[in-house]
Every structure is written in C-alpha cells, then in structure tokens.
Image 1 (cartoon, rainbow, N blue to C red):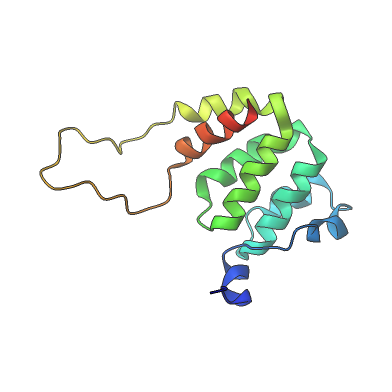
Image 2 (image 1 turned 90 degrees about the vertical axis):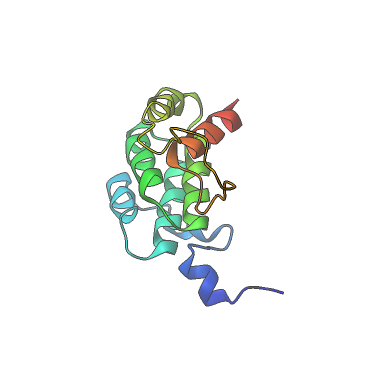
Length: 132
C-alpha cells in the first residue's frame, strides 16, 4: 500500500533530484529554510546544503537535527552531514555529549516500550558511523 503523496510531503518527502532546481540558493537562505514550518522545504534546504558541502552550514544542520520531527527531513539532514565528510565529525561528536536527563535511574517494573524517534544524540552517533 502506497502512502498518499500529501501525507508524504507533510512528512518532508521530496522526489530525488528535486533540489537541483534550487542549487542557486545561497547558504544563508538554506539555513533559514531549515526553520521553515513546511517540512519539504526543510528537506530541500538540507539537500542543497549537502550538495554545497560548506563547513559554514554544519552548525545549522546539527541544530536542525536536534529540532526536526519529520522523518524525511531528518533523513535529509543526516545525509547532508554525511556529505560534509570529515569536517562534520568534531561537531557531531560534541552533540554526543549532550545526553540530557532521559536515562532510567533504576530498572523499570514494566517492560520498556520505545515511543518516539531516536534522540538527536542517537542520530548523531548513527551519522558518525556512516561517515566512517
């Protein structure tokens, strides 16, 4: 069963290669688009930034990764960071240290049920693994 195109777009889905028509956008415009209320615009911005591979975009991408809720936009941000290569490693490692207060302090009585997307630090770790 295929998902409705409107639903996919609300999740940030964008056809592969759609970003090519927007490669003229400057880095600052793309960084601003990462804060758009429209998920597929955030995906577009991440893809353009990934193709540009400019280190200036890395902090904005990592910040967006920490806030992003939509699946396809989050994947595009990860892919953009991977495209940045080794210049993204140190900033991603810094995110790993931001653990927060989400740990279990004791073993729960009931079974553990994961109820959300991975935390930004988990996604940062997966992105680092894919960087090699």
